[in-house]
Amino acid sequence: MAKMKTTLLVCIHRRFTDEASCGGRGSEGLLERLEAEVARRGLAVKVEPIRCFSRCLTGPVVRIAPGGAFFEGVTEEQIPVIVDRLAAAAEEES
Ligand code: FES
View (spheres, rainbow, N blue to C red):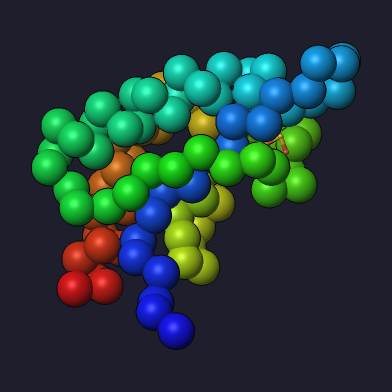
């Protein structure tokens, strides 16, 4: 079985109730900004939307996969740090 390539998973799940969700806290826009930063840096990694890490109360939630760190309550200001960590994970993989 092929090993998963380094990927940034971004929860974009949105609930149409009063319950907490990453999508309800603006994670779709966060996904776009993370994709743009990865492209700007020319990183050969994927950025993919995902539907819920079961950490909904602390969203938006982002994870470096496979097996990497979770980032919770992510803000736009954290994007450079997250992409730095993503680049380091990709470097380790190669
Ligand atoms: S809605 Fe994002 S972790 Fe559940």
